Image (cartoon, rainbow, N blue to C red; front, side, top):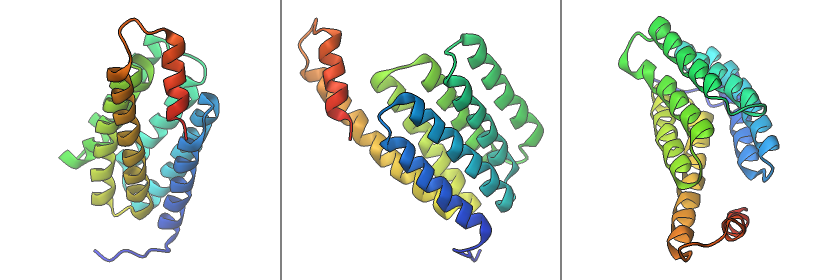
Length: 186
């Protein structure tokens, strides 16, 4: 398959890349989620132009998830987003690779709403690996670059967080944990 690096689909993928990296540069959680919603919107257009309906649907659900995460951490919202992803998968998936973005979105939902710290980052890394595989299969240049960059940043951050946790004495206060988080920020 020949890839046109400057087709409209790829250019929108590059926009998603910029928004995704911009999101991970945010220190404010609210701004991070806003950037992630904008990245997902760009991904919706990108994957629509690439003709990948499951990635488009997964990106739409991820955008909805980012917007909802600005307002709530309700288990009912988690159940709704997971059910929506599974329903889309059942209606749109025609081959095994179609489940990659849908599964990644489910993992991201569980991580963002139910986990924190190293566990959250580790589950997000699993989702990132699935998105990398999907983007390679779909021929998404910007999406692949974005997910590799996100994976590298998250892998480093997860390693630093795990190292800080091991180095912290038992019974250390929450203030020490917040200081560790501030030290990990770019």
